[in-house]
Image (cartoon, rainbow, N blue to C red; front, side, top):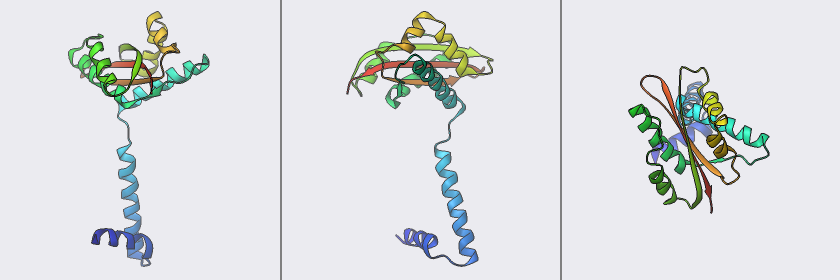
Length: 172
């Protein structure tokens, strides 16, 4: 309780040069740690950019953007980690992933895209183009059936990016 009272006084009644300096330091630390909590890893940034590209493409085709959902992302992340660890691109365990998702949110349709690339300057754009140029993957990207998605990217020890994207229709 004393700390909160002192903290309150720093921000509201400080007049001395020392107190203003302390006040500025506290503000800096608050902002630094606030923004640090939201900083993305390289892999998260690649996933975010991939979703941006997909939604931009969907909108160019007069389709609604897919909404990102953490419940789905968690399943994507687990699968991308497994693929990166095993160095194996696959859909193994897809039924289990959708079952795990359906235990938390009500879904009535689902699909999955996976990809990997290595040594590309723009990993997100490469995965997007791989999916766009593949009939089945493209169908998932532009289907009106899906409302929500999750994407996760994991970079393996040898530098390969493993992508998992799950599409669902979430019926609330």
